[in-house]
Amino acid sequence: MIETEELKKTYKQGSLKVKAVDNVNLKISDGEFTAIVGPSGSGKTTLLNCIGGLDNPTSGKVIIDGELISSYSSNQMIKFRLNNIGFVFQSYNLIPVLTAKENIEMVMLMQGYNKQDMEKRSSDLLNEVGMGDMSKRRPAELSGGQQQRVAVARSLASKPKFILADEPTANLDSKSTAKLLDIMSRLNKQENITFVFSTHDQRVIDRARRVVTLEDGKIIKDIKK
Image 1: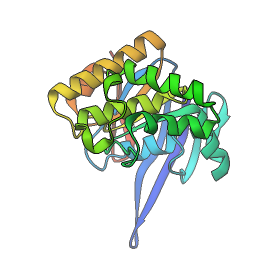
Image 2: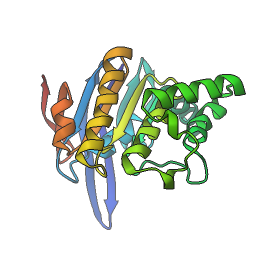
Image 3: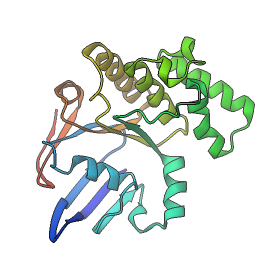
Image 4: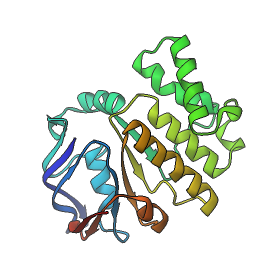
């Protein structure tokens, strides 16, 4: 499903060039529950962003289902992300003035769903993540764990091929983390949704069925459990 070939991403810091991702070759198949791990500055978030089209690689290829997305224009990439990729971020990224239900419906609105289908799917998704009774609450009225569960529901709204989760548990306590990982693991197993995490959280690493370790932008270890 996901493949990178000789992927590189270099940033300039003054007169220095920093190789955030350095010649990464990686294949992730349908249905995987994979954690990309490593210390701060190892390149895991940059790699995730390149896979998801949020960042353009300096060189190399990103191929998803046979499509060379690293060659897409900005407009092509926006459309591809909307219809194929779900994102879950450390900071939740919910729209403050919208309710939980409206945050989820925003994605489907951009996809052209009709109102009836949109409302049914958003309600179903909120129930799926255990937030059905809080659909009218705005983000400020929800705990961090609850906001992140809404964010997971939103990531599923577009019926994506896979979900990229960047440090999704970093701001959560142990109880909220366990609930969130239970939801993600169930979706992965029951609906075969592919999850790729960037994380340094051992709780996520313990649940992953594959752990890819980065150091200085390079893969130094790739273990399937």
